[in-house]
Length: 124
Length: 112
Image 1 (spheres, rainbow over the protein chains, first blue to last red):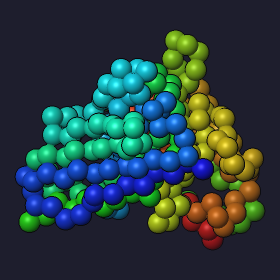
Image 2 (image 1 turned 90 degrees about the vertical axis):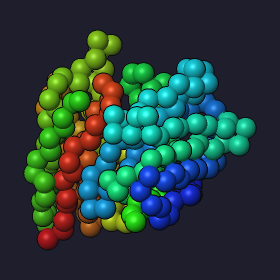
Image 3 (image 1 turned 90 degrees about the horizontal axis):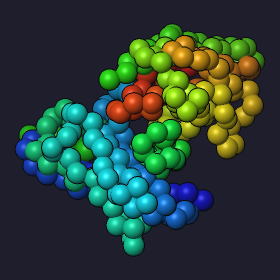
Image 4 (image 1 turned 30 degrees about the horizontal axis):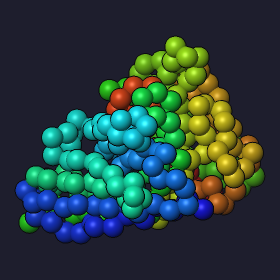
């Protein structure tokens, strides 16, 4: 059974940093790209970024709203994906979901399994 | 970015009746490889989104056959043949033909 468990959320002041983790199980983690999608309170879904598998170079892509502030990385030996969030803004407040990606992340990709999410609140 | 527009934004359906949600994209989702990169998700109350339909019309594993997807180019539809109580939630369409992947604003389905 595919499982994705996010951790690391919490309350953080504007301008500070936070790192989220996504621990995966039930599949060969290194074979898949992984993505982060967020949902502000009462709002819709917004893609944050993803990291491709090593087979596709392990490269990353980001939404314009987070590019230069957020970094996605992965540790295939531990089956964990990370989202490093720096220079946080109040508008980054959201539930952050980790998702498994079907596809390379270049064409024809989608998110098949999602974690339960972790809440990040950016407030002074 | 490709804009995904869903209608209606909410609908209330009697159990056993059909329901239909429209999703229109600002650009064609037909790729040169012949595939169309349109997906449907359902977010039940208090839960993460779950995949329903991939590439317009393919049901994901475990999705009941009362759910069906159709469409082409820029116009797509999700249909539920007979709504059940467990179908309540917010439905989202998503495109991935172009970065960034973008979602519709969501359609909230309630039971009468």
